[in-house]
Length: 134
Picture 1 (cartoon, rainbow, N blue to C red):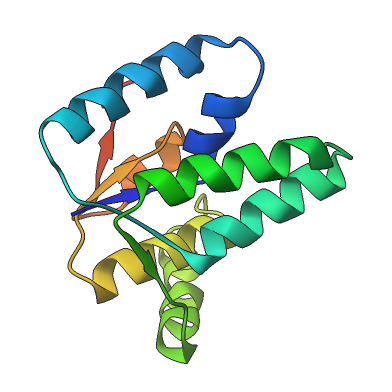
Picture 2 (picture 1 turned 90 degrees about the horizontal axis):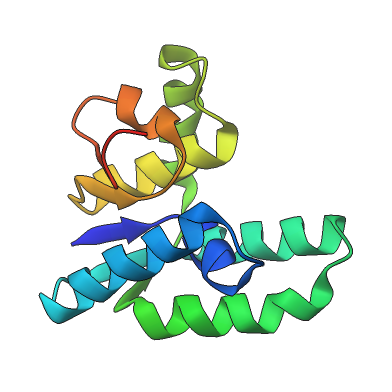
């Protein structure tokens, strides 16, 4: 299973950007390979937060639709994941609180790969970021 970060559907539905085509190509390949994709309720909340803060509410529905269509599973957030995220931010000071929560969810569900354009995931042991590099 592969975890989908919030920036992926946001690039898919956003304006032209180099990551938009890269996201389309990578996700197309993963879907053709029938790879199981997961996300969490926090990723949906992150989309709500970012588009509301930027006063871009018209992008919420398309981003939710894209993420809902791609994700085979929407994983819940519980107290165990929140406390694990707290520990992760101490071990990885460059990791944002949200990304730490994503890592905690991934670990709780045995997920070792994440589709994200956020390079900070690469610093976490046991996590492989797709697309690699960049």
